[in-house]
Length: 434
Image (cartoon, rainbow, N blue to C red; front, side, top):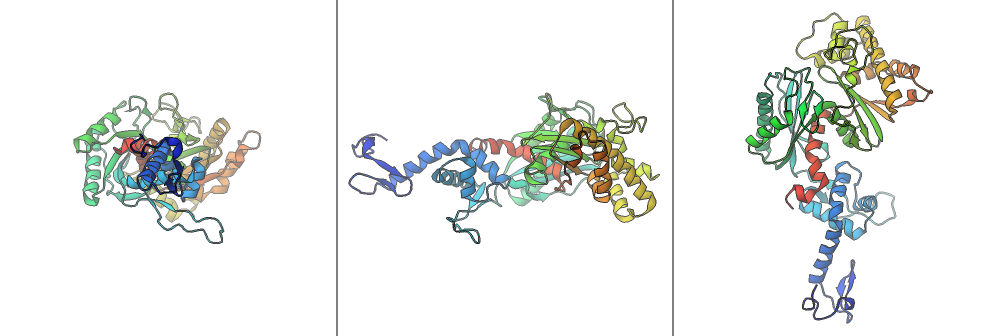
């Protein structure tokens, strides 16, 4: 502020009061211009808090402006300016009528909610039984989902072109703004190259540059947005930690079957542990039955081939079809009480328990989530699974780790969306052109 703007007064002649506005020593109100400058000053101080604030609302940890103020460690005025800026970007909505919770005697606080009409990201998942596209808003909310395709060809460019086209059709139908794209694939994804090293359950070549192919398809569709790719179980774990049964866990272990095979992930303090090059937690190749079924990795008896949907079907003497996950889950749901099905469930549960016990002893998580067919096994034989883990527990403590079912039905799709939302969470203004 120069002398002309201040009416030739020096800065020490001016007092800024966030509640009352700006007044000169003679008591005359210098609003609205000075008040506007005060608001801009508070916003400048709070720009660095925009990303953390958005992540708090995105993950449901800041339902009110008072909670946001406390969580960010800023003043009420700064938190208000931050919330107002996020609202102006179309990301959140601030309740204009603050209300105190029932029975509370404190000052009412403005409620914060994600804007239901805000931007979305395009999320895509490819698995052994097909692929699917979706539009996902902040908060992990599925806005629109395409019908699933039940064929995956051998050319990743053709498949990813088709899934992007399905997402583009959803964008046209909904008229929503797209700010990013994320892809989940059934393979370890090496970093920084973004290559799928072992797409064992789809007929893609090892080392396919899936991130580059996906990015090219997204841009060819006319979407000028960043695109990302990651392992499906890593992304499922990230989604569960932010929006599902993993909330609040500091060391979250997720083990899940894909439509074929088994994957694992570890989320530590909110971030997936992917190792030095993206390849950590390949738990599917932990041996749980020495000399068992041949595994795609060259070994035998791995978790990947001893506890997945195909393993259950083989244990029942059935020839696996094209939709093995659905076949296995339908069998347990419809015939779980029959002796043969119960015996197969118990066999797979015992093998899964051995694998989980080994992982618990190595990783010492504070929570375990199971997904895919493993979630079904947990529901069918929870006491048996816990008993196997406890029997192999070190020091008698590992057996007490909570083992829960994953909460999200489309966790890998939501996780793919989290990849695409991350630049916005890191810096909303830069990501949205502010």
